[in-house]
Length: 178
Ligand code: AMP
Image 1 (tube, protein in one colour):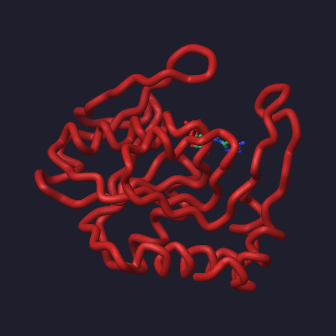
Image 2 (cartoon, protein in one colour):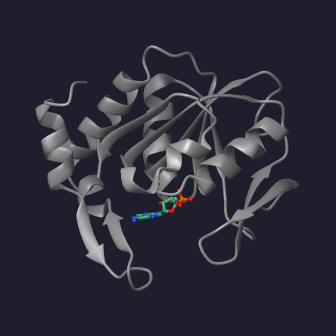
């Protein structure tokens, strides 16, 4: 993938900006037009697979809920297992939890126990990298189960929020930058 790859223009054209969602001042990057377009969705999954092709992963750790859309497609493409990091109250079985700072207050994420095996190399995946707290919390859960975080992948990175600074110098792949 290069910066001039025409598939990136296709993806960019399928991201809808929604001002003031979920609260005033946030410009929400809506990926529903992208997944609603077959060739664009395929291009996104192809580009994610290509951009992390030089690295070896044993498992994708995807973050609720839009991360599941891309994580599931990428895991199936690569023939890798996927672990699902969820918001509180969604997972039925025994689970690990971690709390992290949000812009206002605190968030919590959960992962079923034994979702990641000891020593597994993990790719953390979500749709958008904003401040990085969510991705870092997912990494904490995977590491708590003995996984090794090898890198992070996103469809969109909001560069001005400098979220990759929280991701401890691991490789960060993002298809689109704003
Ligand atoms: P953060 O922890 O700040 O990196 O936030 C990342 C999480 O919030 C991801 O799961 C994103 O889906 C979501 N998110 C944060 N900011 C936006 C945004 N501007 N547009 C869409 N999703 C966002």
